[in-house]
Length: 181
Image (cartoon, rainbow, N blue to C red; front, side):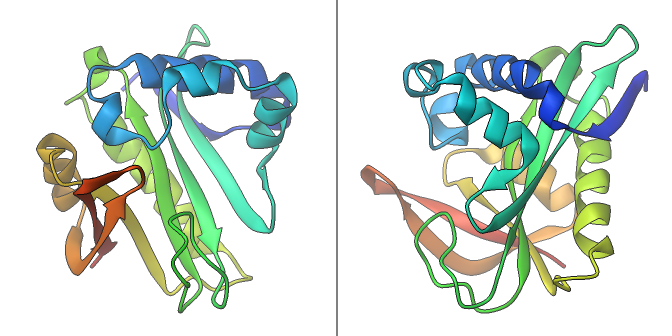
C-alpha cells in the first residue's frame, strides 16, 4: 500500500472539507452519511477548521486519513469518543465510555485494496490507546441497505448488537449498530 495513515491536524481543514465533499458526491452517500453535499457545501470555514481540530462540543474526535505519496487523500474515518451519561450523535443515552466510528469513506478506485482496513486499524488503535477515558466498546452504525459496507465491517470483526435506530428524516429505514467483538 502506497499510503500513510495519519491523524488530521487543524492545518488540514481545507483538505478535510474537500475529502468530505467528495465523499458526499459518492453514489452511495445517500445511505452512507447523515449529511448531504448541499448542506455540507454551505458550511463556513470555521466549521471545517473546528472539525479538523477535533472540536465537537464535549466530544473528543480524531479523524484519520490515508495519504498518498503525492499528498492526495484517498480515504478517512473519524473516531468519536462518547462518554457515559451523555447522548450520542443519534440522541441516544451513552451507557459506557465508547468509541464510535463515523464518516468512513474510501475513494472507489481504492476500495478492495486494504486501505479501509488500514484506516480501521489506526482508528481502533487510537481508541484502545486512550488513557482517559478508557474505552470499553467500539461501535458504528450502518444503513440497512448498505450491504457492501456491512460486509466490510463484519470482515473487520464487527457484529450486529441487536440494536437499531431510525434514520433521521426517514422513518422507513434503520441504521444497525455493529460492535467490535
